[in-house]
Image (tube, rainbow, N blue to C red; front, side, top):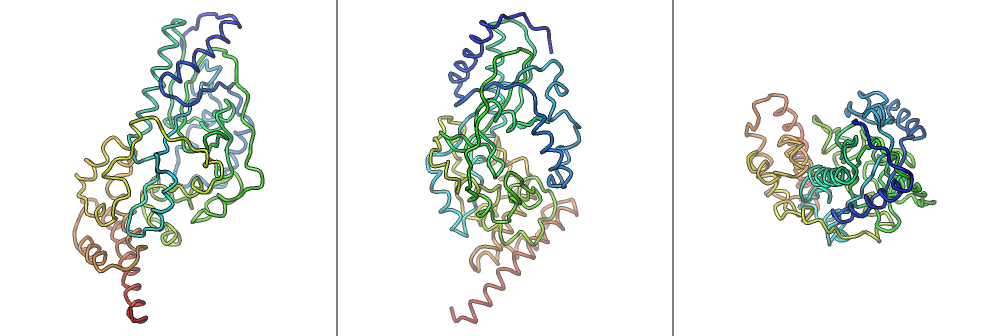
Length: 374
């Protein structure tokens, strides 16, 4: 970081208030400031990693202590400016209905619009540059789920919300449907009061999780989590979790849908987060029928594109296997099973394994219906 001009305490307090005001002008829903002491959260992270709960997310440990020591990641860091940006669409409360429609693909609500990494990063850069125009050159770095940063811990310290039992951040006034991002700065800004935990005795999120991934309050085993399985995992999804995935083809929102605090959820004011028609609760067979080029075109600029076409097909195949019996589904699964989609043998074999599972599931349902005379 560069050398920062000396600023007295009174001016620092004024600057902190200005930063919050500028953040609001840029569309952020909340701005908070914290120090960089993450010792308490570091212990939790180390225990989580030691238990192997990160699965194949090797990036969670390969940076050593930089994740819990901001000053090691960016030398000179003294404070972190955390930001919140709501993303809930206007019909967020209707999302549970989609989970009951087995022939419709459920996509986590955060991924329905433009990639939040792009939106948040652009706004954070503007905020950081606004500060620079006011005080001159100073040291800063902008992050949005893009580096070894304990984002939720920093946001909790900055007063944006508390880390709930499902490990997501919750705000008492707006729930949990929001993104967070940070600016590491070398300015000793006054810090905000950390948020208090208000989960109480509630454990709705633990009870609702389809795969029981929340293995204890405040502890998620990613290896069981549908978001991890459909997004982070690149290979075969363990068979023990496939039925529980239902029609969830990208991510999972169950723990947020059931959270009582989300009755206060705020509809996003950010146009970029408006759900795209081609992704918004479409029929599984329609999504399954996309070519790779159609997948790339229809997901351009979204977070979904990052998983690649093979994982997209894999996820939908499982959902089709879970759908109620349909002759059309069997026909399309068989057609895909007899078509070579990928040059890489390992991708083809991976997809075929899930197609075979889906076909067996659908054929079993067909037999059951025949026996019952339906």
